[in-house]
Image 1 (cartoon, rainbow, N blue to C red):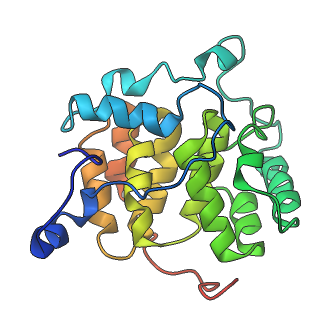
Image 2 (cartoon, rainbow, N blue to C red):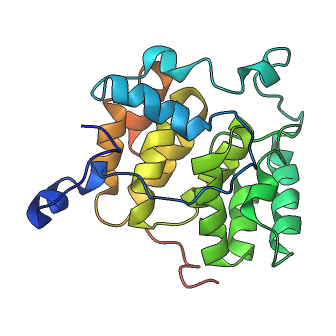
Amino acid sequence: MPLAGKRWHHAEHDRQNRVIRPPVSVTPEPGLLGPQISLFDHALSLHRQDPNSPLPRDGEPYPDEHQYRRRSRRELPEDQRLAGVDVAAILDAHFARADAPPSELADAFHDVDVPIQHNEHIAAAALRADKQRVQRTGRWLVRHSGDRRSAVVGLALLAADWAEEDIPLIQTIGLLSNWFGPLAADALPRRHGGGQEALMWLAQRVAGWGRARSRRRPDRSHRPAAEDHG
């Protein structure tokens, strides 16, 4: 069953299918990303072609492939304890300005190391900022970013929270499992109302390394101590 493009008219039917309901609707900001399709729309388009199977080649090549063709896939710092520090600094500076729109981060991480797994520096930056603004920014980046690193950061921001309404966004971007599978597998079990079922749904629709990650089903369903922060 597709993640998007279908309406539910019966309340009980909706309750039974809440894990794979349509993605959250986010109003795009016109002209910000140019003609390039977002990573989310790329995943959704491929998913609609065969809703019950993994994406062909895990969704690769991505729409931003031309930007990454001549560089190594992910450059890692020599000291792994510093991974994510640059991302956290960019987030801190962004959230320090109350009027900074999420779209400002659309290309902000292209030249920095962005960990694709849970990262304490990025998680701490999310907790330092206003909760609603972090969630709004994460949703925008996942839904609209055409750069894989910015979309990963958006997913990391969503992974710091536990809102049930983010399940379809996380599932959809998680279908691009080579880059987004680890964070999706970390974020989904934390969701209220069906996170484990959502993770099982994703595990059935990713292949290879992403499938192995999803099937581990890490128990991160507890709420962090800073639940009421922000």
